[in-house]
Length: 283
Image 1 (cartoon, helix red, strand yellow):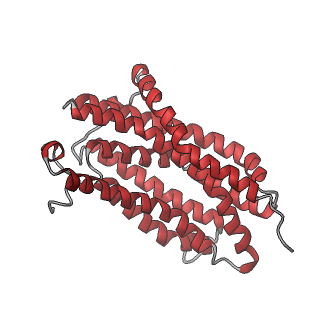
Image 2: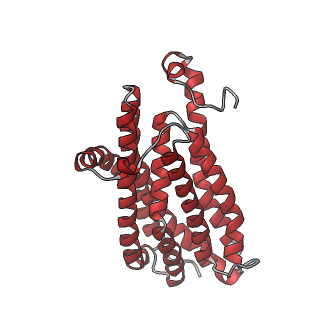
Image 3: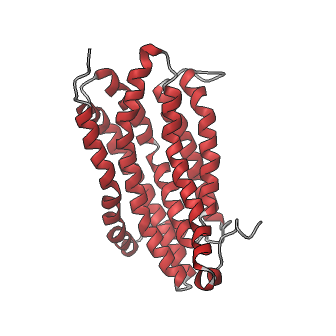
């Protein structure tokens, strides 16, 4: 492995050249952020190639669903900042035992919150999304897309929090590699499931959502496997994943304000989408 591809050592972080070390840590994070945007871009691209009779409402449905989905993804990233803060703090103090405990507790809480958001989202999406647009065809496509995304929300939370934990540990490359694999798979699955190519049924907008969630589930499985086998040195055990009251309170105290802040901008886009969705369409 080349010197630029491996993660920096403690000595390099503390005493190495600042700009070079920051670049080595940050460029995989920038790539990962871009890759996260590719999911929505890929869905929109392929859905836009549906027959003319349905592609306008389908693409508009994705645009309505997008801010809602990103609001919750931003919430997950904000919540993951608690893991980033605690793991980096303990690693800086050379306390790997508590760093692994913090990682496990943050991950278990993320899974629980992911399931809670999934249940709430599946139940409320048919009620809330029509509020953003009075067009029934658009809202139907938005509901079809978001309900499947909500079902996969635990996987989205896991992969988001895993990336934050590993960033705190100083390994920004592994989350990027996982993202690269799953985004590439999504690019392949999207047209197969949207148009029903090969052995797949034609699912339209629902196919785009299902392809995305299957890739997110794969990302979550790989992330948990790497974390629990210690393949990247940081190792979380089943005992670390068992929620403990003191740790949960500590994580929520850090994570909830960060989540609210991170999702605030996305909420603004939800409001903007609702306003635009009610603008009369020229005939």
